[in-house]
Structures are given as C-alpha cells and as structure tokens.
Image (cartoon, rainbow, N blue to C red; front, side, top):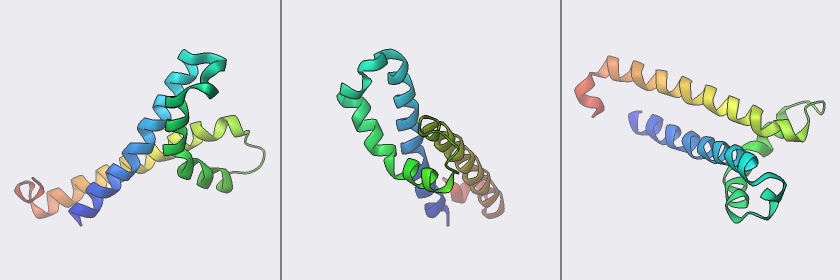
Length: 98
C-alpha cells in the first residue's frame, strides 16, 4: 500500500509541476508562449489531466481557466494522498515507512 501511495504521489506531482511551469512561462514568455518549445512540452505533460477536467467541468468554465482548476484539483488530491500516507505510516510504524 505504501508503494501505491508513493507512486500516486509521483503521478500527481509531475502534472502539478508542469502546470506551475506553464503558469511561469505564461507570465515570462507572454504572447509568444505558443511558439516556446518548453511551454509545449509542459502542455503535453499536463494534457491528460486537463482533458479529464475539461470533460468534468460545465461548458460555462472557460478553456483558459481549465488549467487553474486542474492545478487546484491536483493539489487537493496530492494533499489527500499525503494525509493517507501519513496515516498509514502512523499505523504500521515510522520505521516501516523508510
């Protein structure tokens, strides 16, 4: 179970960092961000998660807001997984979690 939670944390961590990097490049690169190789790479890494969130959100949510909603949901899921990992480590003992 501990291995599963660690793997789940990693799967959530990668798109979170990709979305944060996209946000940073959004600010730094400005309107030329669509031509930026790294911006496109970060979009590719986070695309599966943003597509799922786009399908789940109502049409009233603008496409430009979907990455922000995705980041929020990923952070929320990461916090839940972290708390579950802490709970598991308390139950089985801290030494077993190393």
